Amino acid sequence: MYNSITSVGYLVKDPETRQLSGGKSVTRLRVGISPSNAKTKCFIDLEVWDKLSEIASKYLTKGREFVFSGELAMDTWENKDTGKPQSKYFIRGNNIQFLNSGNKDGNKSAAPVSSGPVSDDEPPF
Image (cartoon, rainbow, N blue to C red):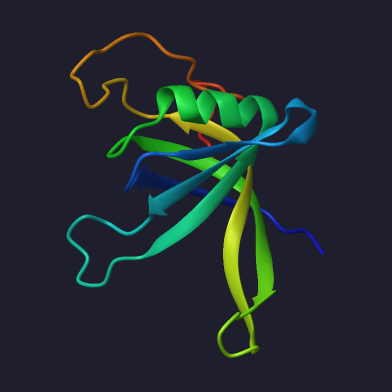
């Protein structure tokens, strides 16, 4: 079965990056994917690794709009208080493309726009 998701979203809080053993890093992004005028808001977590993690933590800030793609994944764990299993869906990202170049300081510095094969000439879908 093929599992691929591409969406446009905006960061609802700053990225959270952790350094792991072996020099690897992982960044978790909380992404809003519903229109700003929607009555019900939809959010999902996006997890990116290694080089993409470094790019996301360096250039993405709260409010930044971007296109992302990846695969749907599920994390499962046992609740410490109740002992019952719990789960949460998230997207394991493999590509991001920035849509606006401003950051929260108002600085419009140039930044890489993609970490993958999506180009400005092709639609990301």
